[in-house]
Length: 127
Length: 375
Image (tube, rainbow over all chains, first blue to last red; front, side, top):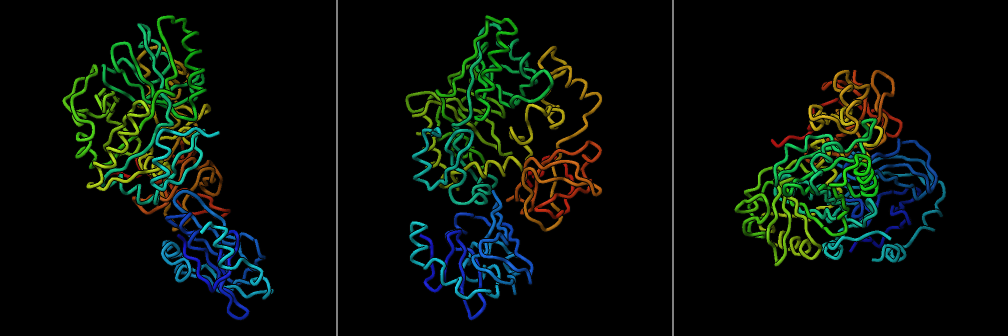
């Protein structure tokens, strides 16, 4: 059974968002890391890059395949998590904590509100 | 509708993640490709390989027929011995790579790739007709057999307990672990009989067991049970692929296809030019003497980069010169590794190359095969 913290918002494509004022932290869910297994490489967007919601902006590679990660929200990348690129397995171990991907300055604060609630995401992953 | 092996329910029960492979619904992994891979390198792993095809070739003309149809010298096989070999078209292109076993005087068993069964059977029948050999019978026995591979350094410590007793086939051995590399024997098992060969696709010591579906389901359970104290893990196609890539065993559709020859693939050792006429001989003989324009090389990433993947371009001196055919993150070496085709001038070990990954080039170096060797 995957962990789905109650204080986050979720995307259908298995990213999570933690909003703090006009900034949000983005990562991938426990369910996603479990499906990927053995994460061996994480590629994150450049700081300063502007991304639109739904845009592929990061890549996670397992032993078997490369998977695109889509930004769940629109805005400008302000910080990336070097710990995750240095030690990709951190995303497997702590998807909601040390394994976060990037911080983004939100262009539209309402966008995150429209994302899936923890219960709706739980229903989607059959948990 | 995808085909399912007799172990389908066992895979589901073990939490296997199922994918389509060659028309079959097969487990790609159970827990983690890395864990399964390392279990095989350090202890033991068991794989469902029931999707592989089986062909029986028999009759007074069988030896002669196979020697004209396959590249290796089949006359070297005494009853109970097998060899890796290839089946080529007239241009030397590879129709399939396979294992040929001589079960007894005039009876051979070919183990072929799942994705190639229809093409192989059509080709084998055409060759039997073409050569006018009425004294050879070729039949697709794939639906009669399921199979498992049990691989790893500790397998020899428990397999005799699962399949006890002496062989009853042409090759007489007292127990399964008396089989030497590439030998095959028939052994009584649970009121039936199974074929056991000391072969595999992982670079480790191990065995492959072929039999009727009810026997193979019992063999699977018995090996998992007996192997538990030794750390056995059920392994999927994901680990099978990383294991074979580390030791540079080819996979049809990646290193091999109908437009690529065994010489280009670096498999000249399995082409016996001195045995007389066989399909593709003229082209292969010429290539062995004059060399080939391209060659399949193994490489390791030297930059910290994403793992190389099939179809990524290979660059040398600022020009794209070839393509990756197999690539992954090596669980044993914790490094990106792969194989690819490059012009022969760049095929020497030590040559600096670059792999283009999502539009950026990362450094790699051509290395000798195999990429991984048991320390």
